[in-house]
Amino acid sequence: MNFLVAISKMIDTLNEWVGRGVSWVTLGLVLVVFVDVVMRYLFNTSFVFTQELEWHLFAFIFLMGAGYTLLHDGHVRVDIIYQRLGFKGQAWINLIGVFLFLIPGCLLIISTSFKFAYTSFAMLEGSPDPGGIPFRFILKSCITVGFGLLLLQGISLAIHSLLQILGIEKPEEAV
Image (tube, rainbow, N blue to C red; front, top):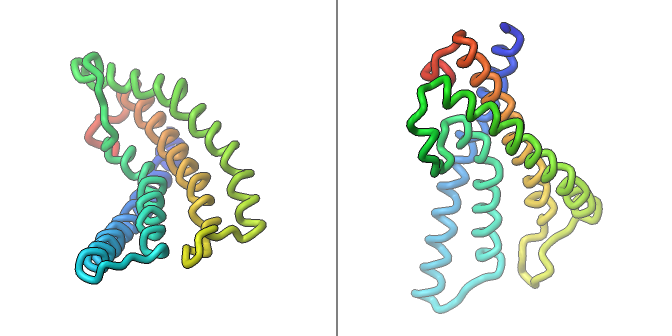
């Protein structure tokens, strides 16, 4: 069990660090949107680079922050059964959900996005628009990496859930 706990702690630490780094990118996104709005409404002009940077940063935040969000149980839940269960019942739902949905979904996206990202990286793909961002391959690579981090956090969630079911860990100890 100590081996599983160690793996889980490593995954949690990794996603915690990635999430904290991504939070600074969020500040950058706010600044880019602010500049775009000022340019548009005060100077009646806009740049393709700025518009593309907005959605590149948003996609980066969404993809790279998904594991961090799962770590802190921040994903939206609309489940009337889950909320009425005790912590062991919730642990069972989490464990089953990870194995039936999260792991297969992540593996599907990782396997399909890898070739997509590799091809983009091999040709150093950039924006097709004049004045656009030249490094689109970096963003496409974030699909594979982001879902890899989400997969790892799903494995950590499964470990925490198993330890809760076995009575080794309490829910508040998980993070």
